[in-house]
Length: 124
Image 1 (cartoon, rainbow, N blue to C red):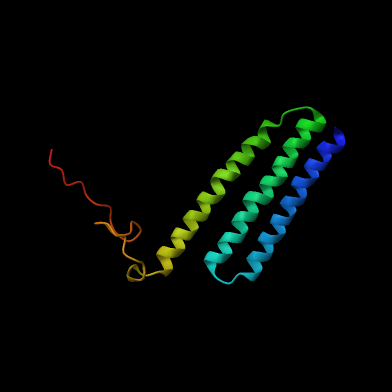
Image 2: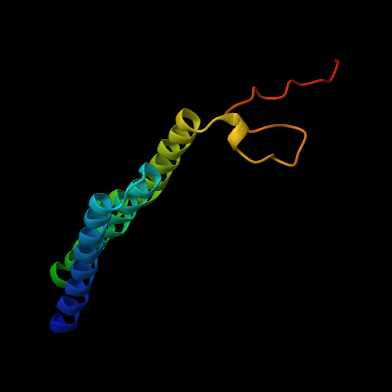
């Protein structure tokens, strides 16, 4: 049982190391800001997440105790990294792309990052 547990833990550590390496390599080799944003975001989410999952499995399967702190850190990481990447991408688009360069929305309102929100037209 211990060998199988160590094998699963080692698998998660190796996978997270590969994602960390690929994310670091992508950060160096990719040219544009939006491309560079993608690589470290995936490395953070999957690389660090894999280490945390391996640590949780170690404490559960080898030590026999549940590590609740690492579960909370993993959930926090999986929720915040994509949201932060979205905000960085939206800020980059707003700072570097003119409103005339974006395609039409197809609706009666324009892009929210360039136009004010529609006002409520109801009279009460």
